Image 1: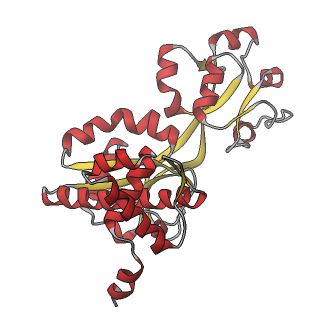
Image 2: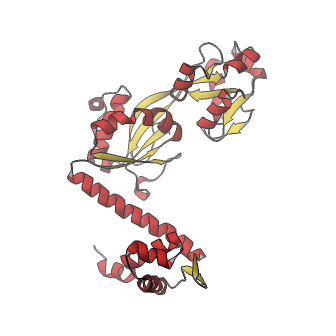
Image 3: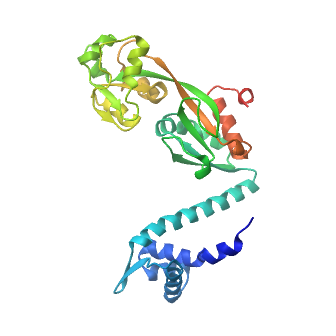
Length: 308
């Protein structure tokens, strides 16, 4: 059922919304008029009509100057988001006409910066007709409530209402700077009793899990300074602040360059968790998603045909 009549009565005119957004950006009626190629009077009337339509003042008028009211600031967020969605939809239709499309992809910061983005040029070169828009999501979310086609998920094989395809199992290791290792004579797990353990706030049990996997007891794995992201933990390790538990893929370059080293020999442990490509079943056949899925599975050494 369509509710065109009801929407037409409640939806503000596009011209009024454009006038409001431009005036809000410039905080100037004059500049908004120049940007939209209208007169100052026309911009003022559009904004006045919009305010009357909404029943609120979007601007505070002070002599010859304007500033957003509290209501105007809140409304501006929604107006810009709506324009962004309309722009994205138009772009997607244009690219679909060329056989491509737009993929809205949610990624994890460390996976994105350390694994995906460095390898992404090969996908872009193979699929110039597809545009991928990246956004960051740290937790599971409802695809039905988000304008996102797929996501990279870390953890267990579980995401309600979505299909999951395994990318890689997680392997972690203990790293520190060469100077820190030498200064603290790190040669066995027992030496970690006197070491500073660099913690990531979203994975407070990382050291305890490593100790359990190696059968190490008698060490408090939750002590030490906390950092919000893997990147911060890695930089703390590089700076010589202590020992960190980090995913192997996140420290490949630093290990190769020697800015960090394994705290001692053979610290690698499988966590039992992994990284997954996740998407709603209803979007499985989107051309852009199909192309990205096949590429990322191959990039992780998996056969796309075997996981369909």
